[in-house]
Image (cartoon, rainbow, N blue to C red; front, side, top):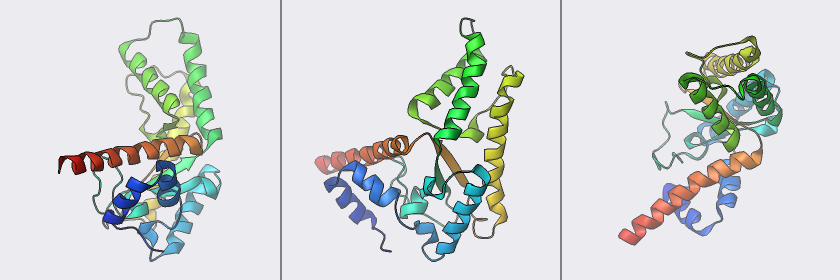
Length: 212
């Protein structure tokens, strides 16, 4: 499989619809990190599928590990290295909605009650997760939060997510990398997030060209 150079990527990005760029270069094909060891990609996907009960069609490597350089607008085009992170997209409407329902079960009895600073801020962050259609379960923290039994399933999901990704470090194939995942409700949510990152990169390229 041929991988675009940074210059080729820039040229293609300026000519192609963002959704096409996302589909063809972010969500499709063998990840750059596994270009010489395709079996490692299979191992990674199988591990996550088994632990999470998600179809292998709904787990993909993205970012610099996928294309060979960072697609974070703040870091583009930093080259992927032997110790760079491996970022994973996990799409599961069922798991996302399970988190959503736990949040509703916690919040509805408090709907007309004034929440303190910590609980109010925590709930606003969770609303943001729901609005954008993605969240990182193991980054949901509970410090200073009253923790009734209704939130225990959410803590269990967060703990399982953390343990699933941490256990990848036991494989020699992934030991040098931090592997982390982001949960999206649907592929449409994942595509919107990543096309917006591409839009920011494209806009920055155009602005530099105009200023040259």
